[in-house]
Image (tube, rainbow, N blue to C red):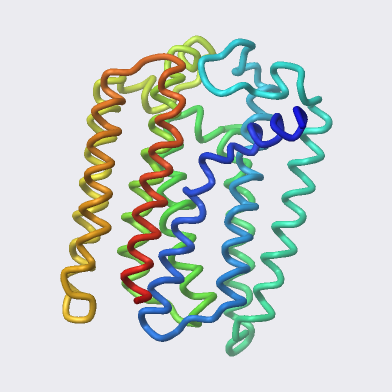
Length: 302
């Protein structure tokens, strides 16, 4: 039982709503537009979760190898650093999960029209390869993105735009501008999860030479960015609401209002919290994102 808990901590269960939210919103939009298909939707959810788990395991493994993690860190316990998981076991879990994710990704080709000259298949394979590369490039390679204040850019692209746009395409068989708008909004919400993580770890990261955006710009600006990201996400979705108003009416505003309430509460707590007390806010930020997603999907579906 203890070992199971250790591995749950390693995959960072509380952060998985970041990957799921983009997929669910794309599925909700597809249903709203009468283009929903169940099997592709399920495959996209599974792939998104597996891809994020690969990224989380890789982050722990490569941070350990780089020496940027240390025992007794402020954030959640790192299994490899603390000696609960061997580096070999973490590496095997990372590679094994990647293989399963690739198999799920390839299975999507069976449910997507290959198009003329199989261009659609090549596009999806290319997207899958890029996702795999960035899952590792975030914390590994000659220029780890998270070490050079580029983590937020990565999250915006690969937890916002990419999952929403390509999930919609896999499910509906076409691209749609609604997916781009929703992808940007979800990306801003996802960035906030990373901001909380880096806000909490700023001192450890600075000592380790890891230049996250919070290390570069400071906590005060990071807290403001957290607030601003939520406002930008809802402002962008306001454009989508105007477009969908005649179909969904004022109900579309309900998820936005609920999210903003939760967002302001979490932001206010963030400003007045330090150290290990910030750990629950990581889950709270992901929770806010998931609650918004579920409410929005409910409006789009019903």
